[in-house]
Image (cartoon, rainbow, N blue to C red; front, side, top):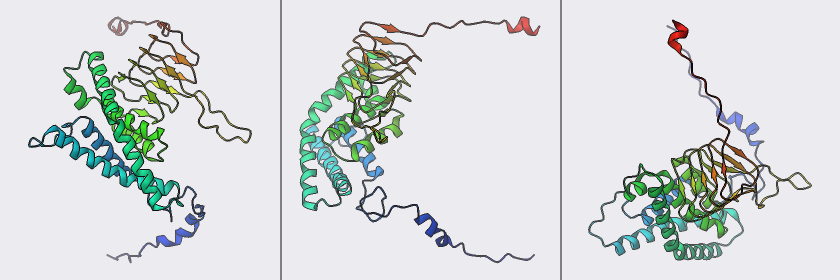
Length: 306
């Protein structure tokens, strides 16, 4: 049998045309030639270490020979060290002209500010876990909620990312929340403001936009979208950023599965929004919104086929 002569594939001849797609001006969005970027693998590790810090033992590590104080000191030191390295990368990438010592100072200040907020964040997370337990009759105990409920994982990451977002930390807050999105199916922008005792039941497919404001004791079910109705543009046709374009949910609101609420509108206190509704206007307090019940037809298949 005649054998074919092997020819080595030369990929380099395709490089010139591909190279033409890159804008090679230093400082632009392309990654080549710039400072190293924060890495999603490292951000995911940081997110998980923060969860372990907030709920010691959740990752199943054997630390029985240590006191709680020793465990917390060890864990806080670890997560701060990991975060420091990624913050430095984020600041140097965001501003290539930033001196290394200035990036270090900004990083240290961010970590100090965040550490001062950790007690407050943990209290909020305990309230979230309690809300999940009290809002779900399937929950056996708080341990089950903390160990297995996707909303707790997402909210732990979000509440930390939100504080970093408010401190104008580049890249990392969004990367943290996208990691949570990948892990749980819950998509929350780090800019979203979320009050105390928040519970997302099931959670898959939930989307909460950047300028959403959520009050206390709010409960969402899976598939809820708190989104923007439109994207305003300036005279040049560019998107206007930083405007309020997502809903505000006041205290004690409940929104059932697959409801879509769009725009800078307000859902008033104690309102209940039924499944599958599409809302573009504000809803008054103490109001229930549901779709009119459709007609259901039952057919006797045995008689029909008999």
